[in-house]
Image (cartoon, rainbow, N blue to C red):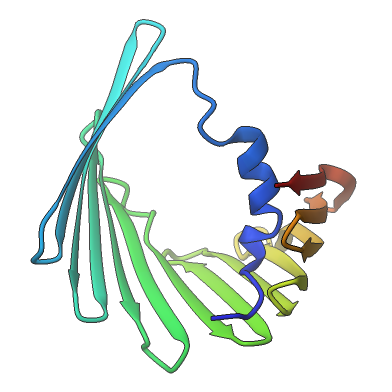
Length: 193
């Protein structure tokens, strides 16, 4: 789709250039894929004297993907994603065991001139999140808000603009958390190829 990126991906090229894959610890990954739609990945990280690891399996069938991960502490994370629930949309249900309050429902709608993401926690006092981006692949303007139903207050709000050209990518994001505006918490990111 040639529309704007979801709000969470504004400035991703520059952030990845500055931060992705810079790891000073020992890390390994082993992946196995099959033609039946099943994938298995084992990851390990040694940080100082501690070792952390997880095993992740992904199963794809039609428009449904089931992603399950077991980590070092025996936590099981599961995410079930269904594409094209409605045209140009997808829905994902995720939860962690044994954390019974971790359930979350995400819905995404992608259009040639807009991207809308929403999320709601599946508990008695959920956190609601909504983000939207309008524009094109080259120029996008968007924002996101978070609302905590337990305290009836906004927990975050962010606005941003992103410009992508073949030779560079620029993003400016303004963030606010709990009623305070931080004008350059996420500074101007510039990425050149």
